[in-house]
Image 1 (cartoon, helix red, strand yellow):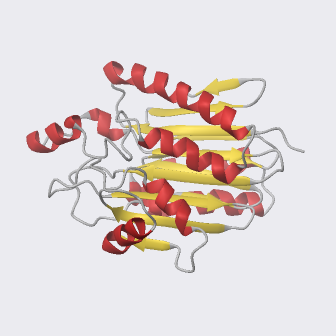
Image 2 (image 1 turned 90 degrees about the horizontal axis):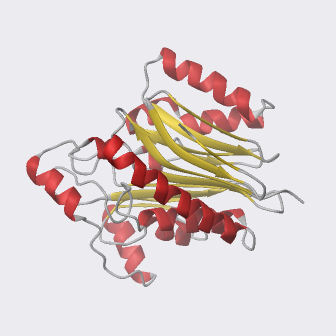
Length: 283
């Protein structure tokens, strides 16, 4: 039996926003408490889906309700989930008008076609009974109308990694994108580059999506762990490479021993780790 562990993240920041970081940290703590309690009686895969769903429902984060808007003023969201015990991945990319993209991705895990984009993802969601939902918050609408890149949009992508009592690992990530991007731009959150889990480690990334994709960060860390590197070393090697390449990104990770790691090349990563006896917060 393993000691359950949960790590969640609320994104990175190119520059800290002192006015908004307090509420974001407070809400992240609340979600971590609820999700860890959920982990006590559920498996890792169920827990990462639950944790990310809670974060998607919080408009302070750039995922689900409160997602950033693309150039045409529409919210197109991406989310992925991966079951480490089966090395099975599913995602939705640029899905619209659903409340919780991570739940749609979760529903795809048992399908033959497990990555859907755009209209196909929306159609699948409706077939599975997910109702129409408007994820655009008043804040994101004002930002788009004024063409203002508020610093709050620099962090807000959400993710979770979990280890359950049976030693199973899982990861999930969800985002509304970077905002004001070209219509149809694909983020890392819906790809294995940003969300990855195997039997040794689970990783969720955040930051500049193109940087995460270029470096296949989550897969790189997960493969290093699978090849025998302890997770702390796998993170250290990878983030040394990211700093050399001047990448702007962050990640949270968890291994099958229950050891967690996080790192970022930016000034800020909002993350919390929780076990049954202690919890830790990034600064």
